[in-house]
Length: 357
Ligand SMILES: Cc1ncc(COP(=O)(O)O)c(C=O)c1O
Figure: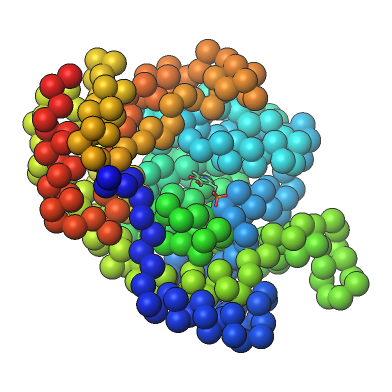
């Protein structure tokens, strides 16, 4: 079976992990600091604060901005649940805006229509690895004086007009094993503002300024040194991983171009797509049949996401946003990861093309 994701672990990663394990300092210390320095430099932000997951990153970004009970945070209706949960962790309410049918990212007209006097932040998502429309979201944010937290958990290395720093208040990353690089579990907050970086560091580490001096309540969201060593080692090869994903996406585009009933991923010329996922849209209620056909052909695929968040019971089971409703019935992600061999890539393309519906 050709899997939908595969971490790229090599001997240099194993050596880095072993060295961290033998260093005698299993959490904190120089490896974590080096990972933060390299990550900030790679991403074009002044600070990177590494944490135990992307979910933790979103959570403490909310705290650092002072989002609290009674506030509203606008999020896309079509994303991973952690984006919306971030607001709920601090007692705020996620308000769901619809997405664009081509990019799968926040639709600016819908976003603008969801802003109320209670809105305190916007969390756009760079879904599947492609930056959201930074120009449109920034303009709305500026008009209403709202901070933007870019959920780039699927999109390390994405850029807008060639800039990885999206000009936001903060951005979050995830290093979960299906992401473009991994630290096993792990995540980060990126920001240019010293106070926000400092607040994130406090919230990450039990609110502690120095031993037994606490600014406020906090969590244990630290990233251990062994994970940081893996992340640091992976970051050195991230550009090569990304190039291979982009090359694989081009090959799939060539192989699948013109296939009836299938729409290929749209690439916005202003965005750098790092292809965490290569996501088709399948017309005419045939998505699940294509998924089954691929399975029979030995090709893994997955649906991210089968329903808009607002239609989930935990978010009040509403009727959902119109475009999010439509595309959640159509999307199917197929393998694009850098571990694919040329033969496997051809097999993926041939399996999609041989689907007769
Ligand atoms: C868009 C998005 N936000 C947040 C997260 C949360 O990251 P993590 O799994 O590291 O907690 C993910 C991870 O799957 C994600 O895809």
